[in-house]
Image 1: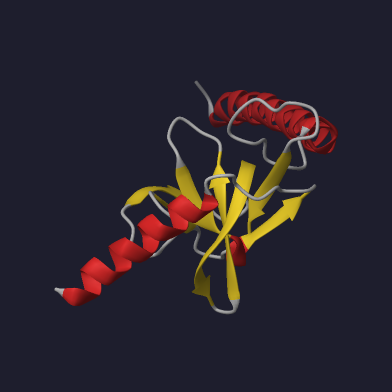
Image 2: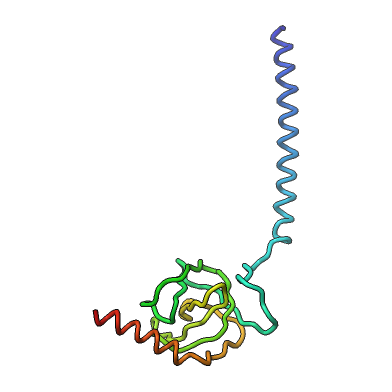
Length: 148
């Protein structure tokens, strides 16, 4: 095979590759333009909602722990990332976190609490009926931890 034949064959392969690359770039650009129209702008809450439910969006840059009771001394039951959305069942006044003493009970597979300090909520969140009992448990846990 002569040098000219080799160069012609390589030129054809290069042209075919360039055509495929052009097609891929055009398809990628089309998908890029179409993607924002299909994307959901807000993350969805963790569970199904009923009409009138309030939800909160986590605003802590590093995320936050879910707690067994409304206190940082309580056991951690999970972790929520920044911008996660959760349904807020009710609220209580408990441990003060940097000037905010409100804690939310969140809906999920288990009962867990998050500090309102790092939550941006929508809608009205009622006070829990058993808030005094939860507050007493949290304070008893704090006293026991600090006593020993």
